[in-house]
Length: 106
Image 1 (cartoon, one colour):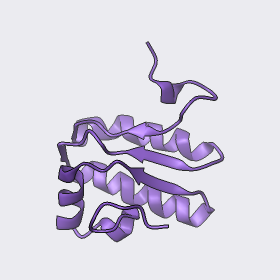
Image 2 (cartoon, helix red, strand yellow; image 1 turned 180 degrees about the horizontal axis):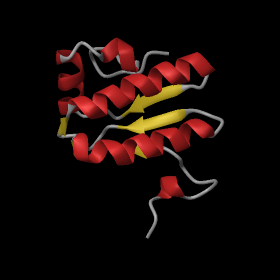
Image 3 (cartoon, helix red, strand yellow; image 1 turned 180 degrees about the vertical axis):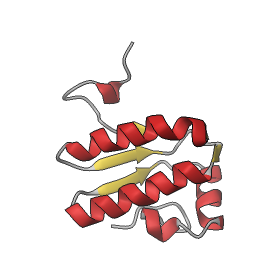
Image 4 (cartoon, helix red, strand yellow; image 1 turned 90 degrees about the vertical axis):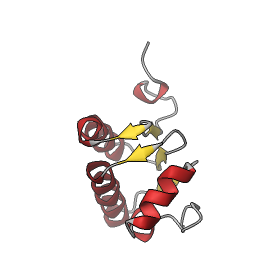
């Protein structure tokens, strides 16, 4: 059964995998490119993240920069404690639009 984000007219938010690694980054990259092609806010749900690697973080930084450049709203929602901890430890919170507490910066 397709994920709701794959269906036209449905919720197009992207869910990060529990373990974001180099292996899962390619799928995320494709989904981010597709999401960028749609009008409206790009929403990334990070609620299930237990670990996140460098490749996934690089994609999120690039997606946020692209969204800022094109004027497309970008938000990371429901960031898990593990996601927030990793992003803050890597000093990337500002680059992906989060505060150190995991709130989206508008």
